[in-house]
Length: 140
Length: 140
Length: 140
Image (cartoon, rainbow over all chains, first blue to last red; front, side, top):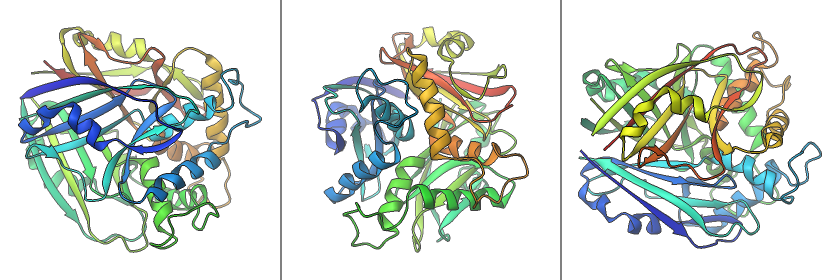
């Protein structure tokens, strides 16, 4: 059984949902050496998150942004943690709703994703800046 | 350390939340060979998802369906991705809220779930059809 | 490749969000033996959950409690599973929104978390009592 791990720094992305599948694959070429295993991508932040969803139509990602802004609004009257700006507390909540990591099976040296699946970086801050990922893969 | 992996095609389920624990266990009998390890179940779709929740009372699963339909409604005025039907965009959002995979510890050759825990297939489309899972288990 | 696993019983926590990072680390000292690997924490319950979020300001955790109570209210008119009290069905839904496990990379014998990340126990019941966790770590 082999285990590989690397860190990847993503450039600053705009607030919203962004496909990063090929960036992840390129950061860990050892995926190709694994016939049967798993990949984990972990984000080292609490105001951005990772998810797996539709990889084709950009309006899906726009609708994610619209819906999460409604479901977790800025300036809710019950927020106490407000000193980092109105986008901060919603970013923390969205981050836990979506999660800090995705784990994907590896089969025959490649991610075993469905045809329409891609990895999303979910940037919840207005100016989140660079984001650091830890990418781990293991298997036979 | 051993690593086992298989794919399982589920039959079409009605929109809603369904227990699939025993289907998963039967698909990978090698779980019994692992004294200490982990199981991952991954769904290769973006409009259905997996979760772990209460395995006894069917009304829990009905309440999940009711609540998710309210929290992520059809025909929200801000949806742009509408050409696949009113159930499609909410299905994508629900899928990311719940997640594409569950990972469960294996102890002494069996899933180490709590007494009341089961694996849910969460079917978010009206006619989702068959769904494909990748099931991986590893450990000593 | 090594694999370690243990169970940890947490004392009863009040309803709300609580940092448990150091309890998890202390329960599995073998983390220090892993140069490159992964840790999983799994909760064996369906009315409490685990998440990763901000580890410094207590008002973040208070705002989580406020927001989840609004997003998943008690006494929704469509709940059918009501016989275990008004806090029970919301607890199940919150538990699936946040998830039953967190998985964190291990690097150089320690959890590779971001500076501001901690592990949350999310107690969704008024009187949830003790909660049991399964903690697994593996790698080289």
